[in-house]
Image 1: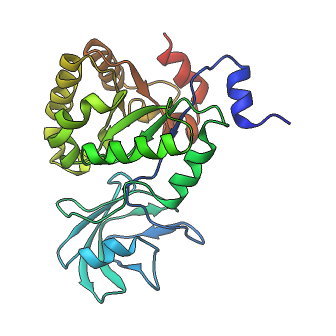
Image 2: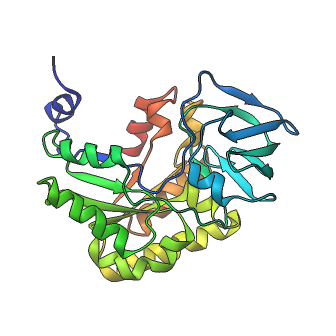
Image 3: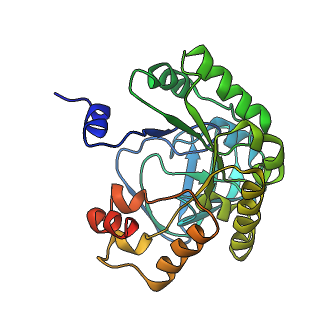
Length: 272
């Protein structure tokens, strides 16, 4: 039976890009999805929804926490050292392994997790041609990934730096020469700043990449409405047009093709 990467290459797709966890914060595995209602209490950490211990240690009452790319919003009401007691502000359904952002809070996280290091050891044998590092904070994160790739005998694999936080925006000029491509990841980047500032931030990052001759891709909610609908909105089509007009080497449609109802139509539209 073909391995997944064999199927990818067999249909004529030469590039295989994987996403590492890196310094990204995520909740752990749930026994079942949780439906959260505004005003409800939610425990994050020991005895509740699993989350990184470093977040539990760093967060204080009043801290806002955004889950699942900001679809859900909770606020820390109390902390006991083992968990955070939170109040749901914006509810919804919480699934396993969804993203968790703490705007304005620095949480100590390693550049690469143990799982990342294990995956990098397998990357070359699986035909991986590029790896994405989330939440790049500076040049040392890129150097750490490059060393890990070289130690795994995969130094030729390309590095894609995901810009998802204010530190990445600030230090982009420092690490831009060290990466092969930049990923403007608007989901968490939009959580790190007032949402109305995101378009201007995207434009500034694009301009820096163009000046440096570095390719970039634009990702997150390019065709989000097509997770449920067979045709996109006019605003989505304009968004993709503007990204390409600004010089984007690629756009990414993840949720649209992974869990959406119309993945073939999404790809057909992208290829027009």
